[in-house]
Structures are given as C-alpha cells and as structure tokens.
Amino acid sequence: MNIGRAAEMSGVSTKMIRYYEQTGLIPKAARQDSGYRDYDAADVHRLRFIRRARDLGFTVEQIGELLGLWSDRSRASADVKAFALEHVERLKEKMAEIEAMVRTLETLADHCHGDDRPECPIIEGLAEGDGGPSDLEPREPWRFGKPGKRSARQRHPEVCDK
Amino acid sequence: MNIGRAAEMSGVSTKMIRYYEQTGLIPKAARQDSGYRDYDAADVHRLRFIRRARDLGFTVEQIGELLGLWSDRSRASADVKAFALEHVERLKEKMAEIEAMVRTLETLADHCHGDDRPECPIIEGLAEGDGGPSDLEPREPWRFGKPGKRSARQRHPEVCDK
DNA sequence: TGTGGGGCTTCCAACGATGGGAAGGTCAAG
DNA sequence: CTTGACCTTCCCATCGTTGGAAGCCCCACA
Image 1 (cartoon, helix red, strand yellow):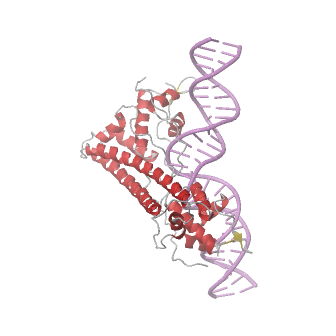
Image 2 (cartoon, chains in turn red, brown, yellow, purple; image 1 turned 180 degrees about the horizontal axis):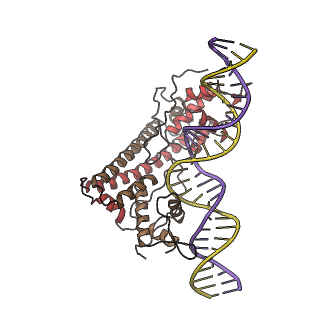
Image 3 (tube, chains in turn orange, yellow, brown, green; image 1 turned 30 degrees about the vertical axis):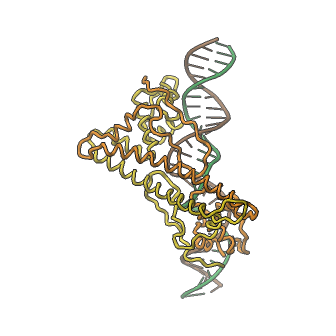
C-alpha cells in the first residue's frame, strides 16, 4: 500500500507519516521496488493509534511512550492509567488557565458599555492592570503535554517609574 | 533606561522586547550614545500592556490591533468589546476541545482497573477507537487566536484493510 | 510508443513565541 | 586596568504541521 492510501486510511497526512518515520516514532517503512514506501494493515493500525493519541492531546514524545505501553504485553494497566491521568491533569491545568483568561476578559467586557463612546474599561484594564504582583496569571505558551520547563517568568519587582 | 531595566519593570523579557521591536509590534527604541536601547516610562507602560494582553491569550498580531485600539482615541468602546468577546469565543472553543479530551480520557480511565494485569481499556481505546467516522474530535494544533485556516483534515473514508 | 497527470521521493522553509548561546562592545565599581 | 554585569547582533532550537520545489515513477489513454 502506498503512503497516500495509508494516509487516507489512517487519517494521518503523508507529510506527518514521513515526519513520524524520520523522528523515529514509527519504524522505517518497507520499500517497494520503485522506492515508494510500503504499508500494511498493521502500519495503518499503528497510525490510527497515533492519530487518536494526538487527538487526545498527547505530544509526539508521549505517543512514543504510549506505543511502548501498547506493545509491552507485560506492563500493568496501572501504568497506562497513571500515564493517562497524569496527562488529564495537564489538560485540566490548561483549561484552568484559559478559564481564568475568559473570566478576566468577561469581567472587563461586562464593565464596558460597548457603545459609540471611546472610554473602555477593557483597554484600560490592559493599560493599567491592577498593579498587583501577579497581575494576571502567568501564561505558558501552551505546549500540549510537556509539563516541565516552567520558565521563570521575569517578575516586575514593584511598580516604579523612571 | 536600559533594556534590562525595562524588562524587569514590564515583565517582558529582553529577548521578547527585541523581538517585538524587530517584528514591528513596537516602534524602534531610541538609542543611547553607547548604542544601547533607551526606554522611558511610556515604553514600559506599553510593554506592560503587551504582557497583559499576552497573559490573556492574545496573539502578537492581535496585540498589534489592541495597541491600535488603545491609541485610537476616536474608536468606539463597542469595537474593543467586540474584539475582546470574539477572542473569548476562541478561548471557549479551545476549552471545549480540551474538555472533550478530558472526558474521553476519564471515561477510558474509569473502565481501566489500574492493577497489575496487562489488559487496559485505555490502550485498547486508542488501538481500536470506536470506528465511527468522527472517531475522536478533529484537533487543531492549538494556536491561540488565529481562527482561520481550519485545515481540511484527511478523513479516513471507511475502515478497510489491505 | 509517447504523453500527461498524479503520486511518490527528498530537501528546505515557514509558522509563533520563546529561550539559549556565541562573539564582541560598554559601563561602573574596585 | 581589570572584572563582571550589562548590552549589541546573529544564529539556532523548540513543536507539530503545512507548503513548495525539483525530480522520479506509474498508469491510463491516444
């Protein structure tokens, strides 16, 4: 089976299939005489696994671990469960961050008349903030999984000018 | 004021300040005789504005628009409000996507004994899916704003092997 | 048998926001 | 004058994904 067909059947683009192969997430595909990559049902099965894991927000690295868990017939289901629930925690943290943004924005928007006049508490909120130390919650650029690397955000020590 | 001080006072890293200048989000900073960038209180004010907007999940591009709205004294507060609420909608969409992931994962985890035995509904769920056409919701790689560009995800037409 | 078009190959670049680091200039305190 | 902290520019890496270019392969149709 050509890569295009495998892509069609797995829901993973040809680009990504080659990328996954290149990065070692999946083994190097067999080759036809033509040099074309050759896939069988098991390969497609694995690709579908990968796509579903991606759809659940796992990083490629995590998917590598999941594939390992998948093929390890002796591993305990507890290991998988722990892995999954750890990821759920990450997802919930992200949700909470976004929710905080939404809450702040909606609060600001509630105070905004939204008419023809120029004065706007939303812009003012951005311009003035509340001056507090944490101001608005620190925000990480949102990698899906990847918990570590909580970069020490530079904190403005106190509000002084000049 | 040197860039380091401006970074400290605004909560924006020196790296990002230079980046924002380079990409045109902020005007080119004045220079001291030494060639060092020179910032005043107004610059820091703008940087704090930017940081708060980032903290609320706006992309740099959107922040550019927000800066425009900020400095446009004739614009209606309704414009700002619409802009903000549009962003809130995007955020809520993202939240819903993540929530769907969480729900799926927790459902799978609920069915997993989590003991020493190897059989695990979580892995099986990834391996088999439900076979349905939408399977698990299509997932976009999560850019913060940037609504457009909903890439036509390749759909696996039906599940056939070989 | 020739040709066209589509699929395949590899390689390179871009996105967005951020951090890391090298190589070298500047400044202030000791 | 030296030292160390700061600044400058430049390039590279991240992560997942898409896009494109240049060139080969294969099949169908005339």
